[in-house]
Amino acid sequence: MPPFYFHAYEGDEIRDGDGQDLPDICSVRRVAVAYAGDLLKEAGDTLFDHDMRLVVTDGTGLTLFSILIVATEAPSVRS
Image 1: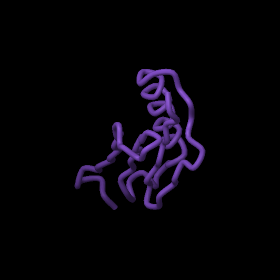
Image 2: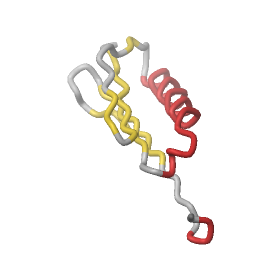
Image 3: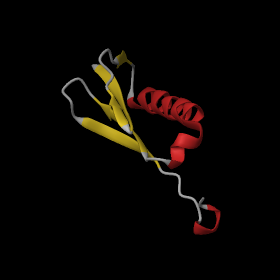
Image 4: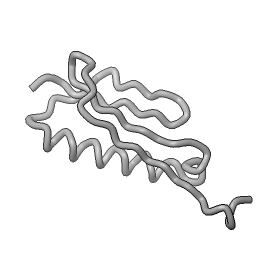
């Protein structure tokens, strides 16, 4: 299969310039979920400052799917 690219958007865009060769779409999804988990771990409190998005594309730039991460605080806990 062609390479797959995992582009992250967390305030700034982090483009994947290398891509990964993976055997099938199930493998691509597993890698994307693991990457999204890593983004969440690294975000800490900044997760509440902006939405995060992971966009997976193929070698032609076609978007295959996106993972959106949105944290919303209840008005009663906002500082």
